[in-house]
Length: 190
Ligand SMILES: [Ca+2]
Ligand SMILES: [Ca+2]
Image: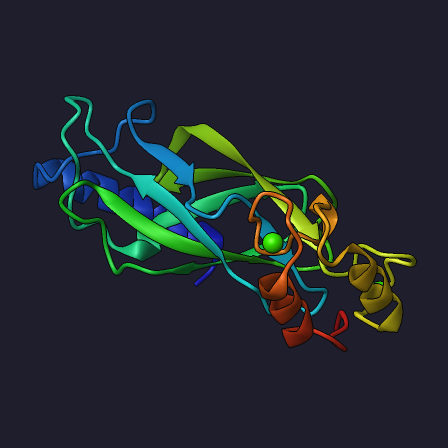
């Protein structure tokens, strides 16, 4: 479905929601929030790891949460690079919340991207900065995780260096960071 057609259908859904008294999201009271992950690490191949989560909360103008809005009624605007969203939940829960994971690729430059959310045709007055780092930060930034990147990573191992803290654990470089790096070793941008 094209974005334009999706927007038109979403607009009709807003009307239907109003008629059914299901509630229309308030652009100021509805929010998008990041976490618990502190940031996203990207592979040039665009295959993860996934950032958990973008949580969008839908609330009416009277502050009550809106339950049951399906995931495909949510849209995102992203500046700073290309990312892919995947819904974790099928619809908003009793708190009006729905979660999405985010995966980026080599198009993202430090420090990251800014993400805004839209529910039906209602653009929320809330956006968040998602901090990003890449496995391919080192030496040549050639969109390929090769031996040079590994050598640089090895030099950071056991130290506190933000660039290699792939699991966003506060700067410490350890086994979990190595496991993440290893899983993407050899990957390159398509
Ligand atoms: Ca590289
Ligand atoms: Ca770490």
